[in-house]
Amino acid sequence: MVIQVENLSKIYRINQKTPGLGGALKSLFRPQYLDKVAVDGISFEVGQGEIVGYIGVNGAGKSTTIKMLTGILAPTTGSVRVLGRDPHQERVANAREIGAVFGQRTQLWWDLALIESLNMIGKLYDLPPAHYRDQLARFTEMLDLGEILHIPIRNMSLGQKMRAELAATLIHDPKVVYLDEPTIGLDLMVKEKIRAFIKQENRERGITVVLTTHDLGDIEELCQRVIMIDMGKVIYDGALQTIRDRFGKYRTITLELSAMLGTGDLDLLDDTEIEAIDGHKWRIRFDRTRTSASKVAAHVMNQVDVNDFSLTEPDLTGIVKQIYQGALNDIKVSTGELAQVTV
Amino acid sequence: MTHYLSLYGLFLRQRFKILMEYRMNFLIGATSTIILQGASLLTITVVMSQIPHLNGWTLEAIFLIYGLITLAKSINHMFADNLWTIGGQYIRTGMFDRFLVRPVDPLFHLLADRFCHDGIGNFLVGSALVAYAWHALAIPLTVFNLIYLIVMVISGGLIFIALNLITAVSAFWVIESVPVTRAIFDNHLFAQYPLTIYPQAIGILLTWVIPYGFASFYPASYLLGQEVGLLAFLSPIVAIVLLSLSYRFWRFGLRHYAGTGS
Image (cartoon, rainbow over the protein chains, first blue to last red):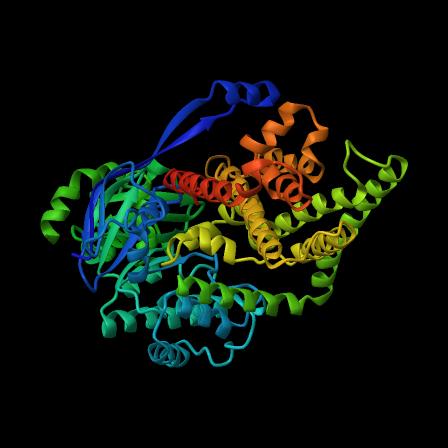
């Protein structure tokens, strides 16, 4: 196993401040602390060559986990092992083997041309010059760096910056790479290029990738496995396919009726549920494993004229939304079941 | 060690490349300190023109003390200025996290990240003052005295750096460490003058608690042939002890570092 996380928790102590000068003085002399549990006893393992999507809403504990995996933060309790090392205790040794992209925070020198920044990083990691040149040539080709090698980072577009960032992160041939929102704010073309690059590095060099993202396209393109975290706890760990099957069994049909009707005026089949009514438009969710779009539509058409209808395919955005809203309790119960399916 | 030295050289070269891109900025920064120092030197000269001695110290002797501490301060200013900005520029922005995922000592990375050219002005002013006072006071120009001068200036610089490091560690808890650093740093202003002009408590404070006196008064006294005993040679030891204490405290702070949560 490349990454082993066992019962890992991180608790931040936050000094509670009451407003006003009096409150500031009070918190100076008699600090009131509030313990905020950012990560709450999580465990998982990641094998060599896996690309794992680590997803959750803002504040779920993603960044804190990544900071413990990279060795930036010490765990409060529990343990982390990356390639057999404790990343916080053996920070320098760990740093040689990992790479990290932190969203839009650049690790490049703002005022230096990209090639100068990369040279600096090559020296920081003490790379043999020949190896460095090989890597640089490879990335220049794969990430199309030729045109931007001599431009300072401050003059680059977002997409150019992210390509530069990836080169800087992978130039020392890390075995494990943490990518925090690597495609945020980028246009589709650049996204595609970056995903293709990550895929290729994974396939050809066997790098292990932990990816946090809000972009479900990233996950669908790159990850076979997702770990979902909410309020500091792992709520799902398993194959992307399983979660898609389980939550993707619902589809939504939108029917435009010829008349305005109230909720009680229309008889609906079992295994269906009204999602929303917007004037003439009824959005009905149904379980596609138990019934079908044509049956649901036909049943409605028998009662009222339908002008138009459309069907929404399940996508991960909708699935994740479902899990976050309400369906959370549902999935908590079924985590065991899902885990059994995938293990 | 050689790795770190060559890395520092590289950082320095890149830093100058950037500075040369902003030439006006560079010139203003490097000369502004000269103007600032010029103003306070003018004040001293005016005051001393009214009184021939300050507790037995002539204008030239005070220039020697002032020059020595300015040289020591310039070392801190040039090579360790980021100890002032660690909170606002590095911890708050998350830049410090970057240092922690690189295979070098984060303190080295922090200091190497920005050579501060503003310190060059201080260095020039300090050198000029010491050279002038040396000549005016007819201090013998021996090899020993020159080596003594260099060792004392470097020790003084390290004392400045160590004290700033101790106070900068507070950034790991409160993020903005400038007020804490300033509260200690400003005590060096006392050490721009002979410690004998102050009440004894201040002399003790600047010798044994916040030992800026070792960056100016004691070496100057020795060079002027005044009896200060062992204190004339204690600066390097004080510097080493203080540095190792401050580095330990830095390591302690680093273990408690919790980032900014984003």
